[in-house]
Image (cartoon, rainbow, N blue to C red; front, side):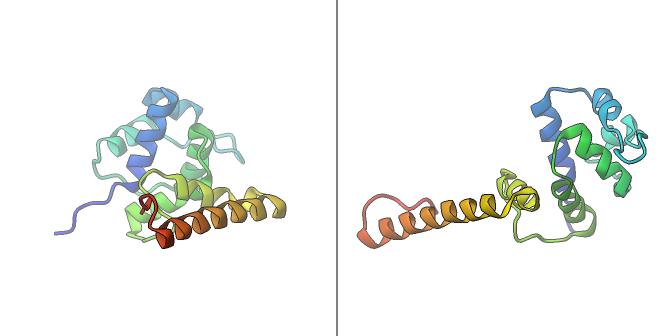
Length: 140
């Protein structure tokens, strides 16, 4: 028997805790931006956070949670796909940093993406220099 994935539930639970809002408050502030409706229900959120079986979120629920949680829509979509469809993502990390970077990349200008790539290259060069010189510990 396969263990149930909790990627989406964990993301919602952790972000709600970071914001310090109740389940009811999150449901109230999760407004679907194109219709103004509130498709996120308290009972569904409660079951989700307790890792009880829930139906997969609809696109409207994901868009509303994007507003309510302040999390990139792409991050929510990927977490939901991982939990409900067992989708594996190459840009998934435990601390959500790579998910956020990947989700925000399309919002960046060409210059910002270039700067981000330069930063990543700098880290890679430093790691390679440390490894080849035998000085310091690797961060791997």
